Image (cartoon, rainbow, N blue to C red; front, side, top):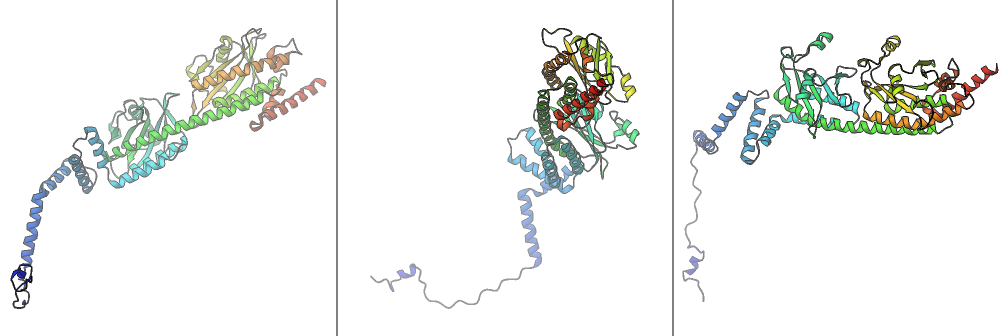
Length: 497
C-alpha cells in the first residue's frame, strides 16, 4: 500500500515545503563590565560552595598562631596536608597523626637532603669510616659548625667521643655533661644559649677559645630500644639556634645511624674473631715446631699480643729455688728478676688465679714507680697463670703471662673484657704442657740449675736478645729457629773460649 500523499509520511519525518531559511540572527554585543560581573558571580559562588574564605582564614590564623620558622608557603602546605589527612584517615591513632605531622612539617627540599645523608651513612660498614661519614653528613644536613658523636662502649662502660675537631677520640662517663645526661635520660636537648644553661660545661671553651652558642643533642636508640650513643650538633649557621625542623631531621637521621652503628659493631666483632683465629693458627704452627725454651717464651709473647690486641706482653717463669720470677724484656733483652710475692704478677703466681685490672693506677697492688721511671703509662692489666700438669712436683704455677694495655680499633687504650679473659685462659692451658716439656728437656743435662736459670743461662741474656733482634712477625717460626741457632752458636763459642 502506498503511503505517498496520505499525510502519514509527514509523521515519519517529512516536512512540508516552505520558504528557504534566512541569514542567522545577529548576536547582541556584551560589554566587558557584564563579563566581569558574571565572572565575579561565578567566583563568589565557588567560594561559598567550597568555603574558601573559611579555609584562608584558618591558614592565616594557623600561621600567626604557630609562627613557624619555615617559610609561610611551606607552613601552609603542611597545614593543608594535615587537614586532608584528618579527613581521609578518620581512624588514625594519635601517635600516627603525630608522626605524620612531624614528617609533614619538613619541607621537601630538606627531606631530599635527609634521604641523601641516610643513603651515604648506611652504605659504609667499617667502624672508623662510618663515624667520619656520620659527622660530615650531619654537619651538611643541619648546617652546623661542629658535630660530635658519642658511641657507648659496653666493655668499658664509657661514651667514646668522636668530633669533627678532635684528632683522637676521648672518653666520657655516662651522665657526665649534656651528652651524658641525654644518654641517661634519652631526652632531646635543644639549648638556645649554652652559657645560660647550668648543664653546659664551659671548660672546653675556655681551654680552646672556641665559643659554643647553641647546640642540639639527640639520643641514638636502636630497634631493641637500647641507647647506643648520642649525636650532638653545635652552633647553627645563619641563625641563632636549631629549629623544630632540625630536631625532626636529626631524630629521623639517628634512627638510621643506630642501624649503621649496629652493623659496624657486627663487622668489628667479625674482624676480631678472624684475627684471633689467624693468631691461634700461627701460634699452633709455631709451637708444634721443635723450639727451645727461649724461642717458646718469645713465641708466646708475640702471639699473646695478637690474641687480645695488647700493647705489651711479658712471660714470667717461676723459680721456686730462688723464690723469684724471671723474665727478659723484649725491648732491651735485659733480664727481669723480681721476688715471687711482689706486685700483681707475684700475686698471680702465688695464688694461681687470673687477675684483670681495668685501671692500674686505681689498684694499690700496682707499682707506679716503673711507669715514672720509663715514661710508659699503664692503664689495663691482665695476668694469666700457666699451671703445671696435675701431679707435677714443685709449685702449681709454672709461669705468668702478663698483658698490658688493651688497644682498641681507634687507637685508644681500653680494658680487657670477658672474651679476652676466656681466650687467654684457653691460651694458657694450651701452652702449659708445651712450656713444661721444654723446661724438662732443657733441664735434663743440668740438674743443679734452677728452671729459670736454665732458660736464662747467660747473665747477659745473649740467646734471648738474639731472638728478639731477629724476630720477624711475618716469618715467626723460621726467624725464631734461626735466631736461636745463632744464639746457641755464640754461647758455644764463649764456652769453648
